[in-house]
Image 1: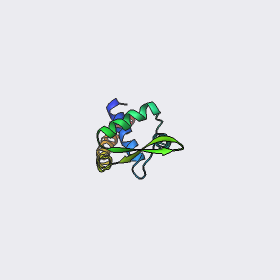
Image 2: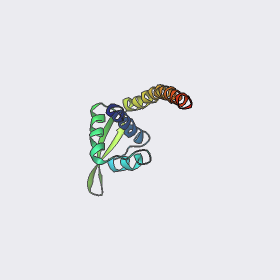
Image 3: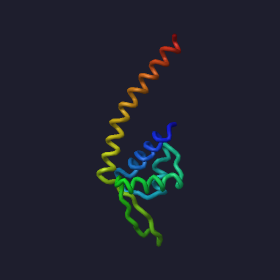
Image 4: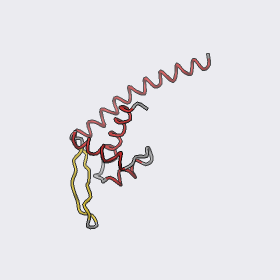
Length: 108
């Protein structure tokens, strides 16, 4: 898969994981498991990039005597998800066209 496309998909998937409820790293990894495997070494740079882009904010909370970072999606993060959904509709139109052409050639 194209690295830029994959990067965009990971960003949006992480934002979607925290869209309804604030969450922390390990929980985000668990929540993403049904659609993708993601490691901590992949997740945390994504979270830092999204924070730098103001797509999410971070709040430190004490949990069982340790600091846990909770991530909260911003309005800009929600807008990024909505923009992705619109763009994905266009990508699916292109995919369906390509798949249709391949099916015609297979019958051909």
